[in-house]
Image (cartoon, rainbow, N blue to C red; front, side, top):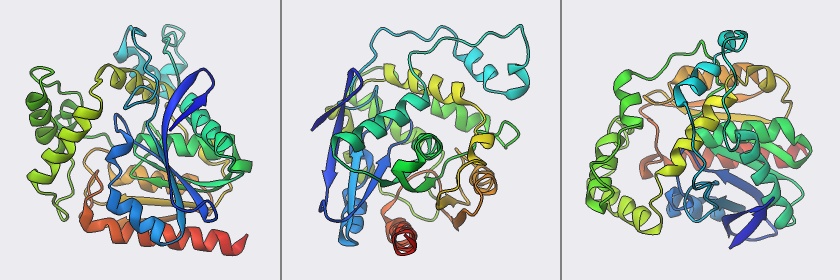
Amino acid sequence: MKILSGNINLEVKDFGSKADTSLVMISGFGSQLVDWPQNFIDKLIQNKIRVIIFDNRDVGLSHKFSGEIIEDQKLIWRYSYSREKLSKEIKKPKIPYKLTDMANDCLNILNALDIDKAHILGISMGGMIAQLFAFNYPDRCKSLISVMSTSGNPELPRPSKKVIDGLTLQPKSSRKEDVIRNNLMTRKLWASPKYPTSEEILRENFSYRYDRMYYPEGLTRQYAAIGDDGDRTQRLQKISLPSLILHGDSDNLVPLEAGIDTHRNISGSKIEILEGWGHDLPEGMHEWIVDKIFNHIKSCEYNN
């Protein structure tokens, strides 16, 4: 279904019973709502959790900001470092939207679905958006669940050059097979070593994703929004909501230290670390993560 957020439309799916507690799950960089494994969603529903997922702006079937050009991406990433923000020589670059706008999309979804408060979960870039939602709208947020995400602290370890190059690697062409081949190659860089996914399943997923919507232009603007938001540590320190941080010790894209720093900056938060988990959601660890989410939500609901 389509939900209006300001003057843009977002593609939203709502699973489970309206009588159950609501969990909004925010996708990561470039991900579509179909990237959430159905088996994972089903396990949450079985635990009496209503699940709301959606395509972020600029991906999937949600609104596209076509024609909005990012003039200098490198400048955006330079600006994201706090020390350089102090330099008068560096002017903040213009971008079409911010991560705070994407957090506001989540608020508009709650309003449209007549949900007063929800647990907010975000994965990777979605975790950053979830953090901002918890900071900006604490009265609408039952709890925060930040999954393989980061505080944005510029002092944290960075991914290797090989991983960063893989993140921005472009396929040879926009042909389906070239795109799938590129996705298979780059995914290996941050896949979970202990929980492998077969190439057959990955090909099937990438094929379905391509057929649903192939729109690489939107990634540039999402990438810019991440860089623009920069360091969130001071904002995280003001969050007093129940918060759960989930991270793997084998994450090559967002290193474990980023999850630990997020935990360190949110007072009273809890962190759970899974051995052999990279930067994906393989079926082999669904039971573990669902168990952590369910126990966290159950604790929040009981204490309230």
